[in-house]
Length: 421
Image (cartoon, rainbow, N blue to C red; front, side):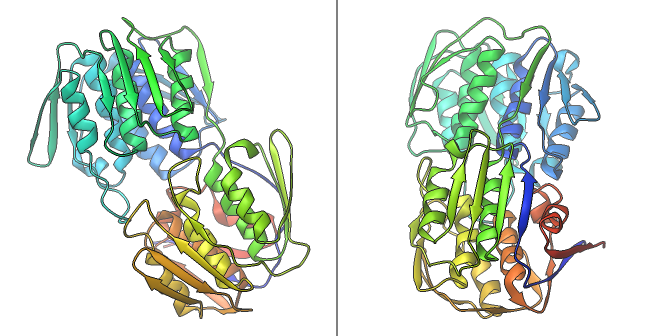
C-alpha cells in the first residue's frame, strides 16, 4: 500500500484551494435517490469514499454521469435494487445513509450494518428505533437491516443523543413521509444543514435548518428539472491546512472555504498565537515565525470544537510552548495517534478520555502507521516539523478524507512525496 515520505523542517507558505466537503457530499449523493428527476451535484471532492458511494449507487441501477469538473449527475429513475452490500458498507459506514431514502421513496431497503473507522462505537439504534416510530417494519438478521414500509408517517422524534448520520437519515426519510415530522435534539453540523438546503431545492419542506429542532412537512414527490447543487467547502480540510501552517510557523491563505463554519477552530488557533484574517470565502493564517502556544480544548457536537480536529491540535500541542489539555467527549477510542506521536518524542500523557500534552521544541522522525482518517492527518502534521525523514504507512485512511494531500502540501513548500505500493 502507498506511503508518504516527509522531510520535516520547511515552513509552509502560499495559497491553497479547499475541496468540497466529503461529509456533505456523501449524504447528498444518498439524498439524490429521493429525486424523480436527474440532479447534478458539483464541488464533489475526488476521494475514495466518493468512489465507493458511486459504486454503491451504480450497483442499485442508478445512472451516474461524471464530467471533467467532477460534477456528478445522479439519475435514480433506473434503480432496480435496494441493497447496500456488506463488501461496500464495511469500508464506509456512511453507506447507512441510503437506508432513509430507499425506505421513504421505494418502501424497502436491505442494508448491511456499517463498518468504517475504528474510532469507537457508533450504533445505528437511533436510526432504526426512529424509523420504527414512523411506521417501518425493521428486522436485523445476519448483519443486515431488512426494512419495509408501505408509507412512512410523520411523528415527533426526540433523539436520545446527538447523531449526525442519524439526523441525516431521518431527515431524508421524513421528506416523503405522510404528515409532519419533528426531529428534536437534531445535529446542527453545517453538513446536516447543507443536506437540508439540497433537499429543499428538490422540493422538500424543511424548516429549523441549523437548529436542534427540525420540522419536515412531507410531500408527495421530490424532483426539479435541471437542478444543480454545489457542495459546501470542507471545514475539516480547511482546519487541517491551517494547523499545518501553524505547526510549521508559516503563513498560508486558504480559498473557496467559509470562515463562518470554523469559529471554534479559528478561536483556538488565535489562542495558539496565530494571526487570523478572513473574508467571505477565504482565511489567512500567519504565525510570523513564532512557536505556537499550547491550547486546551474539549470536543463536542457543533458548534463546539469538532472531534475531527482533535488529532491535529494534539500534534500542534506536541511542539507548542506550555501544557495543553485535550478532552475527547465524542468517541471513546480517538487517541490512537498518541502512541505514534510519542514514538516521535511527543510528551503526551493519556488519562482516560484526556490527553495532557507538554510541548517541546522539536520532534524526531520515525516510521509511522496511520490508524484512522484524522489520526493520519496528525501524523503528517507532526512529520512536517520532525527532524529527519518520516515514513507514514497505511495512508489509505488519509485518502478517504483528503484530496491529494501530498500535492497540496508540496504546493505550500513541504518536502513530501507519495511512494506507490
